[in-house]
Image 1 (tube, rainbow, N blue to C red):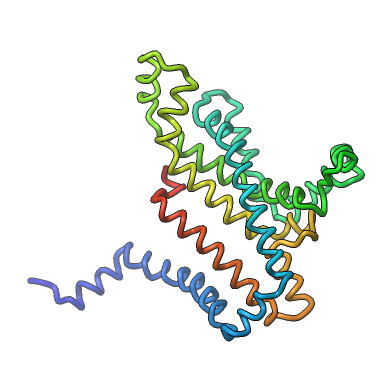
Image 2: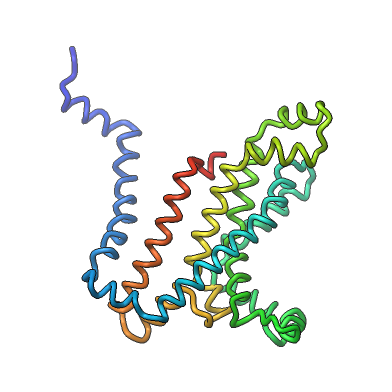
Length: 269
């Protein structure tokens, strides 16, 4: 006897997939509703007026510039480390991988405290850099240092997964044709792993532009957008902070759109 549509739907809810959809839908709404509230909380005219503030413009420029530099540094330094981890069979691989993940589990404010201890003007490194005219706190460089610490692991972990997804047989075939390991890396491995690498860089950019805890410890000035949001909230209230938060959300969403556009899921490479 054929089941009615209502009976079929009821059985679908009873099975594991139906339950998963229902429970997952609750969490999805928990993500979505605050985001929608952010975009409708303030009248458009008030948002535009607030975004015209010079301080907000400067903060946006610092955030975009620092996040871009952070993404570049993470790419330059993170990809070689990721490749070494992906291809190494040595025991130190697990220890190094765990070390890479540490900034992801540290509270950002703790990360900022550690970096401030290392780079403050009274430290050896910070003192030498300041004497050379490159202060490592309260500067654009300080913002990049803070963002790189918390965001670069996304590049390493994602690129590592991408490299592990490249069959070694392709690399062996390239080497058997007389290509060096360096040439094989650039002409075979990198092109095949590039979607995952680019996904990791995009995630690092998005994470960097939203970083607050480590950044405010290292560089209250120049202000980034998250710091500007905090200043607006503490001095003028929630209404003044909302438009700046809206701008930050828009930039972050744009970065995620780029991530989807490149067509690579960084967690399944």
